[in-house]
Length: 221
Image (cartoon, helix red, strand yellow):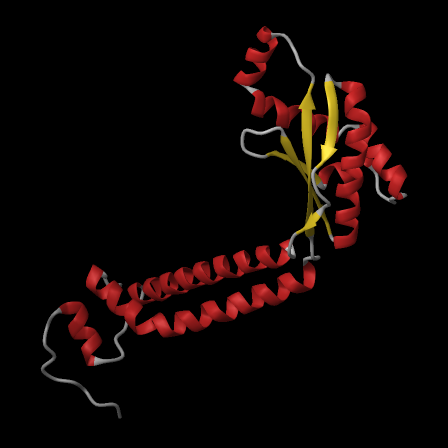
């Protein structure tokens, strides 16, 4: 007969099986960490900042630009930065053996909090390549943007800065998530398993489920 577990019974099972569940979760977490290190290539992020100086414009245009400047700034330069003109120029300058679409996937643009500063981010497996590409993108933007837009100049504020290994951070997140999931799943399995038990191994188990005292037991022969 299946046992109907109360909330107290569930907590009792969890208390008894928590050590075993922790061991299972730790093993799963270590396995995920090892596999991730083996199959995930390391990636680095290099970023460079550009200062955009628009030309002086009429008051009407000025008021319009100030309304939605941040969104327009990010969107416009994100499109220009990922255009074939800019990316082809970068590939040519660095003699890269990748296509324009492949390079485009590795690039992102961010606006620095209500300012005229744009941050270009490049993610690559080789940290030197990430830094070179980000710096060359900045140079290419300085060269091409004045031709395309109403801009006095585009200046690079600093050399490209390289981040720590991005893959290491991702692996840590995967390991934490796998530990939490394995812990909850293993505890759930133990609770379900107890609820489906049709026999009792100990007298105490029978008394806990039925709330009846055991008067007589038959010894094993």
